[in-house]
Amino acid sequence: MKLANRVIAWQRTHGRHDLPWQNTRDPYRVWLSEIMLQQTQVSAVIEYYQRFLKHFPDVKQLALATPEAVMAQWAGLGYYARARNLHACAKRVMTDWSGCFPQDAASLATLPGIGPSTAAAIASFCFGERAAIMDGNVKRVFARYFAVEGDPSRRATEMQLWQLARQELPSIKTCATDVEAMARYTQGQMDLGATLCTRSRPRCTECPIEKGCLARRTGRTEELPWPRERKILPERTIGMMVACQDSRVLLELRPETGIWGGLWSLPEFEATDTAEHACQTLGFQPKKVQKLSPFLHVFTHYRLTITPLLAYATANRASSDLTSSARRWIHVEQLDALGLPAPVRKLLDGLRADQLLK
Ligand code: SF4
Image 1 (cartoon, helix red, strand yellow):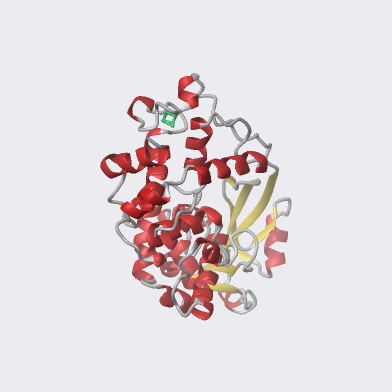
Image 2: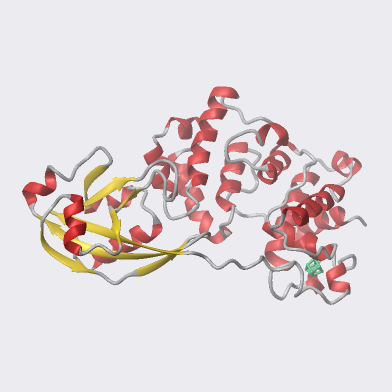
């Protein structure tokens, strides 16, 4: 039996069927889940997905939302470019596609933030298109099944995997006799990678494609796929000012592009600055300043050490000079409703719990 038919049969009885974004052909819901699941675990996505849908139940509501409202629902999920693209994509669907997602992978891939694999997943789940996907789980399954050598994040290896994935699509006959086949095959590949063909200790004896798997036959399941080449991440350090006054905290809206784009964050200063100079740069004389313990936040491309400074501002200066178009004094009670970067949220929540934001 062909690989695809084995995966389809296995998915029917052993795959996942109860995730909140399953059992629907609504492209809005499928698209949202696919974007959220990029580089993020299912368990982390479920709550965000459900909350996001409550706020923006359809593509029109999302397109009409403000960037701040979208960011507020995304904050904490990371990779914020996804949220900006999500918003841009919803607007494009409204303006260029009359509010209906296109129904084929090639057209879907022209929309902001939708790459070829995501486009194929949406097209196969919602419209039954025979289109190959290639996410991290699928790369692992194919790299093992065909004993593909090379770092899968390298272009040449990835191209080889794409070619194999296209070659193994279910036949037109299978899809014609089983209308669900393509969606089930797409889901099956994802499920196989997530539940059996895991990074370490794959459960090969339960695997529906064990017989044809080259890595299994040659005892190379631990060796394949090749690990990603390790890069030494550059280090950066910054200071962050937690300026407080009357239970309000000074926040600034970050530019749309770049790290934490479109989120509210704390004003930053050079880590080598003295506390005095940092306050001066921000334009105020604090009543009291307290140095807090530095902490580390790791991005995919660098490691950031943040040294926070807690400063209580005097009332008259606080409310006037420090407020610019991008800066606002926000009451601590309103912090929950804002999109804040995860480390800033953690820092402010800790200070709130210790009743230091006053
Ligand atoms: S036999 Fe093992 S290594 Fe091969 S695809 Fe199945 S789970 Fe993965």
